[in-house]
Length: 321
Image 1 (cartoon, rainbow, N blue to C red):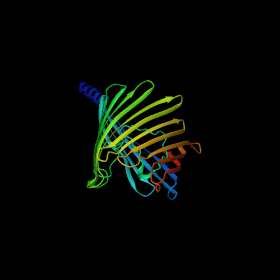
Image 2 (image 1 turned 90 degrees about the horizontal axis):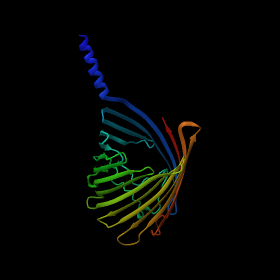
Image 3 (image 1 turned 120 degrees about the vertical axis):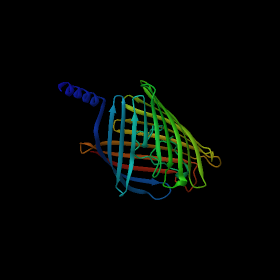
Image 4 (image 1 turned 90 degrees about the vertical axis):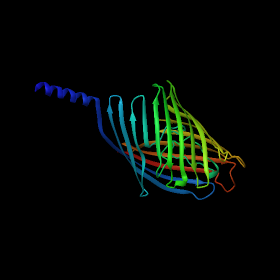
Protein backbone atom coordinates (compact mmCIF):
# COMPACT_ATOMS: atom_id res chain seq x y z
CA UNK A 1 0.00 0.00 0.00
CA UNK A 2 2.80 2.39 0.93
CA UNK A 3 4.62 1.57 -2.32
CA UNK A 4 1.48 2.31 -4.31
CA UNK A 5 1.05 5.67 -2.61
CA UNK A 6 4.72 6.50 -3.18
CA UNK A 7 4.52 5.48 -6.84
CA UNK A 8 1.41 7.60 -7.36
CA UNK A 9 3.08 10.60 -5.73
CA UNK A 10 6.17 10.25 -7.93
CA UNK A 11 4.16 9.94 -11.16
CA UNK A 12 1.98 12.90 -10.19
CA UNK A 13 5.07 14.97 -9.46
CA UNK A 14 6.67 14.11 -12.79
CA UNK A 15 3.52 14.98 -14.70
CA UNK A 16 3.21 18.25 -12.83
CA UNK A 17 6.82 19.11 -13.62
CA UNK A 18 6.36 18.29 -17.30
CA UNK A 19 3.19 20.30 -17.86
CA UNK A 20 3.18 23.78 -16.39
CA UNK A 21 0.52 26.40 -16.75
CA UNK A 22 0.21 29.91 -15.40
CA UNK A 23 -3.00 31.61 -14.45
CA UNK A 24 -4.26 34.07 -17.08
CA UNK A 25 -2.82 37.57 -16.70
CA UNK A 26 -5.09 40.60 -16.93
CA UNK A 27 -4.12 44.23 -17.39
CA UNK A 28 -5.46 47.37 -19.02
CA UNK A 29 -4.34 50.76 -20.26
CA UNK A 30 -6.18 54.00 -21.00
CA UNK A 31 -5.19 56.34 -23.82
CA UNK A 32 -6.79 59.71 -24.64
CA UNK A 33 -5.72 61.95 -27.54
CA UNK A 34 -6.65 65.58 -28.11
CA UNK A 35 -5.51 66.56 -31.61
CA UNK A 36 -5.46 69.67 -33.76
CA UNK A 37 -4.66 69.59 -37.50
CA UNK A 38 -4.06 72.68 -39.62
CA UNK A 39 -3.94 72.46 -43.42
CA UNK A 40 -3.04 74.95 -46.14
CA UNK A 41 -6.28 74.02 -47.93
CA UNK A 42 -9.44 73.41 -45.93
CA UNK A 43 -10.51 74.04 -42.35
CA UNK A 44 -8.54 73.22 -39.24
CA UNK A 45 -9.60 70.08 -37.39
CA UNK A 46 -9.97 69.61 -33.65
CA UNK A 47 -10.82 66.18 -32.29
CA UNK A 48 -10.60 63.97 -29.25
CA UNK A 49 -10.38 60.19 -29.33
CA UNK A 50 -9.36 57.46 -26.96
CA UNK A 51 -9.83 53.94 -25.74
CA UNK A 52 -9.39 51.52 -22.88
CA UNK A 53 -7.49 48.39 -23.93
CA UNK A 54 -8.33 45.30 -21.88
CA UNK A 55 -5.66 42.60 -22.23
CA UNK A 56 -5.69 38.95 -21.23
CA UNK A 57 -2.81 36.54 -21.85
CA UNK A 58 -2.14 32.93 -20.93
CA UNK A 59 0.37 30.17 -21.55
CA UNK A 60 0.74 26.44 -20.91
CA UNK A 61 4.01 24.55 -21.35
CA UNK A 62 5.11 20.92 -21.47
CA UNK A 63 8.87 20.58 -21.65
CA UNK A 64 10.01 22.71 -24.58
CA UNK A 65 6.51 22.92 -26.10
CA UNK A 66 4.06 25.72 -25.39
CA UNK A 67 0.61 27.02 -26.22
CA UNK A 68 -0.17 30.69 -25.57
CA UNK A 69 -2.91 33.12 -26.41
CA UNK A 70 -3.74 36.79 -26.19
CA UNK A 71 -6.86 38.88 -26.52
CA UNK A 72 -7.19 42.66 -26.47
CA UNK A 73 -10.62 44.30 -26.41
CA UNK A 74 -10.99 48.02 -27.10
CA UNK A 75 -13.61 50.23 -25.43
CA UNK A 76 -13.53 53.49 -27.38
CA UNK A 77 -14.59 56.96 -26.29
CA UNK A 78 -16.89 57.29 -29.31
CA UNK A 79 -19.07 54.53 -27.89
CA UNK A 80 -17.89 51.75 -30.18
CA UNK A 81 -15.90 48.63 -29.37
CA UNK A 82 -13.23 46.72 -31.22
CA UNK A 83 -10.53 44.07 -31.07
CA UNK A 84 -6.80 44.70 -31.36
CA UNK A 85 -5.19 41.29 -30.89
CA UNK A 86 -6.86 37.88 -30.73
CA UNK A 87 -4.57 34.96 -31.47
CA UNK A 88 -3.28 31.54 -30.48
CA UNK A 89 0.39 30.63 -30.72
CA UNK A 90 1.96 27.19 -30.28
CA UNK A 91 5.27 25.47 -30.90
CA UNK A 92 8.65 25.29 -29.20
CA UNK A 93 11.99 27.09 -29.07
CA UNK A 94 12.77 26.09 -32.69
CA UNK A 95 9.48 27.02 -34.35
CA UNK A 96 5.96 28.23 -33.65
CA UNK A 97 2.72 28.88 -35.51
CA UNK A 98 0.55 31.92 -34.83
CA UNK A 99 -3.05 32.29 -36.04
CA UNK A 100 -5.79 34.86 -35.53
CA UNK A 101 -5.49 38.64 -35.46
CA UNK A 102 -2.07 40.18 -34.76
CA UNK A 103 0.74 42.26 -36.23
CA UNK A 104 3.69 40.58 -37.91
CA UNK A 105 7.26 41.92 -37.97
CA UNK A 106 7.66 45.66 -38.48
CA UNK A 107 9.64 46.55 -41.61
CA UNK A 108 9.17 50.33 -41.30
CA UNK A 109 9.49 51.27 -37.59
CA UNK A 110 8.71 54.92 -36.81
CA UNK A 111 9.83 55.11 -33.20
CA UNK A 112 7.85 57.60 -31.10
CA UNK A 113 5.20 58.36 -33.74
CA UNK A 114 2.52 59.82 -31.47
CA UNK A 115 1.25 62.11 -34.23
CA UNK A 116 2.17 61.84 -37.93
CA UNK A 117 -0.07 63.70 -40.38
CA UNK A 118 0.98 63.76 -44.04
CA UNK A 119 0.28 66.47 -46.61
CA UNK A 120 -0.82 65.82 -50.18
CA UNK A 121 -4.10 64.00 -49.65
CA UNK A 122 -4.69 61.07 -51.98
CA UNK A 123 -1.98 62.24 -54.38
CA UNK A 124 0.87 61.32 -52.03
CA UNK A 125 1.51 58.01 -50.36
CA UNK A 126 3.83 56.40 -47.81
CA UNK A 127 4.61 52.71 -48.23
CA UNK A 128 5.59 50.87 -45.04
CA UNK A 129 5.80 47.27 -46.35
CA UNK A 130 2.83 46.51 -44.13
CA UNK A 131 -0.12 45.74 -46.40
CA UNK A 132 0.11 42.07 -45.40
CA UNK A 133 1.39 42.73 -41.88
CA UNK A 134 -1.93 42.07 -40.19
CA UNK A 135 -4.89 43.41 -38.20
CA UNK A 136 -6.47 44.06 -41.57
CA UNK A 137 -9.98 42.72 -41.33
CA UNK A 138 -13.39 43.64 -40.04
CA UNK A 139 -15.12 40.45 -41.12
CA UNK A 140 -14.10 36.97 -42.31
CA UNK A 141 -10.39 37.77 -42.62
CA UNK A 142 -7.55 35.86 -41.05
CA UNK A 143 -3.83 35.49 -40.58
CA UNK A 144 -1.37 32.65 -40.14
CA UNK A 145 2.35 33.12 -39.49
CA UNK A 146 5.12 30.55 -39.17
CA UNK A 147 8.17 31.53 -37.11
CA UNK A 148 11.44 29.60 -37.35
CA UNK A 149 14.44 30.31 -35.12
CA UNK A 150 17.41 29.21 -37.20
CA UNK A 151 19.74 30.31 -34.40
CA UNK A 152 19.86 32.80 -31.56
CA UNK A 153 20.76 35.49 -34.10
CA UNK A 154 18.71 34.54 -37.19
CA UNK A 155 14.92 34.30 -37.22
CA UNK A 156 12.44 33.78 -40.05
CA UNK A 157 8.77 34.69 -40.31
CA UNK A 158 6.39 33.63 -43.07
CA UNK A 159 3.17 35.59 -42.74
CA UNK A 160 -0.04 35.18 -44.71
CA UNK A 161 -3.26 37.16 -44.77
CA UNK A 162 -6.51 36.31 -46.47
CA UNK A 163 -10.24 36.99 -46.55
CA UNK A 164 -12.49 40.03 -46.44
CA UNK A 165 -11.10 43.26 -45.00
CA UNK A 166 -14.19 45.42 -45.05
CA UNK A 167 -17.31 43.35 -44.65
CA UNK A 168 -17.76 43.16 -48.42
CA UNK A 169 -16.76 40.18 -50.53
CA UNK A 170 -15.79 42.49 -53.40
CA UNK A 171 -12.83 43.75 -51.34
CA UNK A 172 -11.21 40.40 -50.54
CA UNK A 173 -7.47 40.35 -49.94
CA UNK A 174 -4.76 37.71 -50.05
CA UNK A 175 -1.09 38.15 -49.33
CA UNK A 176 2.17 36.49 -48.34
CA UNK A 177 5.02 38.15 -46.42
CA UNK A 178 8.38 36.44 -45.70
CA UNK A 179 10.68 38.29 -43.28
CA UNK A 180 14.16 37.56 -41.93
CA UNK A 181 15.70 39.18 -38.85
CA UNK A 182 19.46 39.10 -38.23
CA UNK A 183 20.83 40.25 -34.89
CA UNK A 184 24.47 41.20 -34.40
CA UNK A 185 26.18 42.62 -31.34
CA UNK A 186 25.47 46.18 -32.44
CA UNK A 187 22.71 46.17 -35.10
CA UNK A 188 19.46 44.32 -35.74
CA UNK A 189 18.56 44.01 -39.42
CA UNK A 190 15.06 43.15 -40.64
CA UNK A 191 14.30 42.52 -44.32
CA UNK A 192 11.14 41.33 -45.98
CA UNK A 193 9.03 41.07 -49.11
CA UNK A 194 5.27 41.07 -49.55
CA UNK A 195 2.93 40.24 -52.40
CA UNK A 196 -0.68 41.32 -52.03
CA UNK A 197 -3.77 41.08 -54.22
CA UNK A 198 -7.02 42.81 -53.32
CA UNK A 199 -10.12 44.24 -54.95
CA UNK A 200 -10.93 47.93 -54.63
CA UNK A 201 -14.34 47.22 -56.13
CA UNK A 202 -16.09 44.46 -58.05
CA UNK A 203 -14.31 45.62 -61.23
CA UNK A 204 -11.05 47.20 -59.98
CA UNK A 205 -8.17 45.09 -58.69
CA UNK A 206 -4.72 45.72 -57.22
CA UNK A 207 -1.75 43.37 -57.59
CA UNK A 208 1.06 44.86 -55.54
CA UNK A 209 4.47 43.72 -54.41
CA UNK A 210 7.04 45.45 -52.28
CA UNK A 211 9.96 45.10 -49.92
CA UNK A 212 11.28 46.70 -46.77
CA UNK A 213 14.64 46.87 -45.04
CA UNK A 214 15.19 48.21 -41.52
CA UNK A 215 18.14 48.61 -39.18
CA UNK A 216 17.93 49.25 -35.45
CA UNK A 217 20.90 50.22 -33.29
CA UNK A 218 21.96 52.33 -30.34
CA UNK A 219 24.02 55.50 -30.46
CA UNK A 220 24.98 56.16 -26.88
CA UNK A 221 21.71 56.29 -24.93
CA UNK A 222 19.62 56.87 -28.08
CA UNK A 223 17.85 54.13 -30.03
CA UNK A 224 17.87 54.70 -33.81
CA UNK A 225 15.78 53.24 -36.65
CA UNK A 226 16.65 53.52 -40.35
CA UNK A 227 14.28 51.98 -42.90
CA UNK A 228 13.53 51.94 -46.62
CA UNK A 229 10.55 50.46 -48.44
CA UNK A 230 9.43 50.34 -52.06
CA UNK A 231 6.31 49.00 -53.79
CA UNK A 232 4.88 48.56 -57.27
CA UNK A 233 1.28 48.11 -58.38
CA UNK A 234 1.47 45.75 -61.34
CA UNK A 235 -1.96 46.84 -62.60
CA UNK A 236 -1.47 50.64 -62.62
CA UNK A 237 2.36 50.56 -62.76
CA UNK A 238 2.39 53.01 -59.83
CA UNK A 239 5.54 52.91 -57.69
CA UNK A 240 6.04 54.28 -54.16
CA UNK A 241 9.42 54.64 -52.44
CA UNK A 242 9.64 55.65 -48.78
CA UNK A 243 12.41 56.30 -46.25
CA UNK A 244 12.44 56.98 -42.52
CA UNK A 245 15.06 57.91 -39.94
CA UNK A 246 14.07 58.30 -36.31
CA UNK A 247 15.48 58.16 -32.82
CA UNK A 248 14.21 57.80 -29.26
CA UNK A 249 16.24 59.22 -26.40
CA UNK A 250 14.62 58.53 -23.06
CA UNK A 251 11.21 60.22 -23.12
CA UNK A 252 12.04 62.20 -26.29
CA UNK A 253 11.48 61.09 -29.87
CA UNK A 254 12.24 62.64 -33.26
CA UNK A 255 11.60 61.32 -36.75
CA UNK A 256 11.64 62.05 -40.48
CA UNK A 257 9.69 60.42 -43.32
CA UNK A 258 10.34 61.00 -47.02
CA UNK A 259 8.24 59.42 -49.75
CA UNK A 260 7.80 59.79 -53.50
CA UNK A 261 5.26 58.44 -55.98
CA UNK A 262 6.22 57.42 -59.52
CA UNK A 263 3.03 57.52 -61.57
CA UNK A 264 2.86 55.98 -64.99
CA UNK A 265 1.55 59.28 -66.37
CA UNK A 266 1.37 62.83 -65.02
CA UNK A 267 3.28 64.38 -62.13
CA UNK A 268 5.22 62.43 -59.53
CA UNK A 269 4.32 63.91 -56.12
CA UNK A 270 6.46 63.62 -53.00
CA UNK A 271 6.23 64.50 -49.32
CA UNK A 272 8.49 65.23 -46.38
CA UNK A 273 7.18 64.83 -42.83
CA UNK A 274 8.93 65.52 -39.53
CA UNK A 275 7.55 64.59 -36.13
CA UNK A 276 8.55 65.01 -32.50
CA UNK A 277 7.20 63.84 -29.13
CA UNK A 278 8.08 64.17 -25.46
CA UNK A 279 6.54 62.26 -22.54
CA UNK A 280 6.61 63.19 -18.87
CA UNK A 281 5.13 61.71 -15.68
CA UNK A 282 1.63 62.86 -14.80
CA UNK A 283 1.63 64.32 -11.27
CA UNK A 284 4.58 62.04 -10.40
CA UNK A 285 2.19 59.08 -10.40
CA UNK A 286 3.55 55.72 -11.47
CA UNK A 287 2.25 54.36 -14.81
CA UNK A 288 0.65 57.69 -15.77
CA UNK A 289 2.15 59.97 -18.45
CA UNK A 290 1.29 62.93 -20.61
CA UNK A 291 2.88 63.26 -24.06
CA UNK A 292 3.18 66.42 -26.14
CA UNK A 293 3.67 65.75 -29.84
CA UNK A 294 3.72 67.61 -33.15
CA UNK A 295 4.31 66.95 -36.85
CA UNK A 296 4.80 69.08 -39.95
CA UNK A 297 4.49 67.87 -43.54
CA UNK A 298 4.96 69.40 -46.98
CA UNK A 299 4.07 67.98 -50.40
CA UNK A 300 5.45 68.82 -53.85
CA UNK A 301 3.99 68.42 -57.35
CA UNK A 302 0.39 68.16 -56.19
CA UNK A 303 -2.65 69.93 -57.65
CA UNK A 304 -3.21 73.58 -56.74
CA UNK A 305 -6.40 72.65 -54.90
CA UNK A 306 -4.67 69.92 -52.88
CA UNK A 307 -3.36 70.57 -49.39
CA UNK A 308 0.43 70.85 -49.62
CA UNK A 309 1.17 71.75 -45.97
CA UNK A 310 -0.10 70.07 -42.81
CA UNK A 311 0.79 70.86 -39.21
CA UNK A 312 -0.55 68.79 -36.34
CA UNK A 313 -0.32 68.84 -32.57
CA UNK A 314 -1.43 66.28 -30.02
CA UNK A 315 -1.66 65.86 -26.26
CA UNK A 316 -1.89 62.23 -25.17
CA UNK A 317 -2.70 60.91 -21.70
CA UNK A 318 -1.74 57.34 -20.83
CA UNK A 319 -2.49 55.34 -17.72
CA UNK A 320 -1.58 51.68 -17.27
CA UNK A 321 -3.45 49.76 -14.60
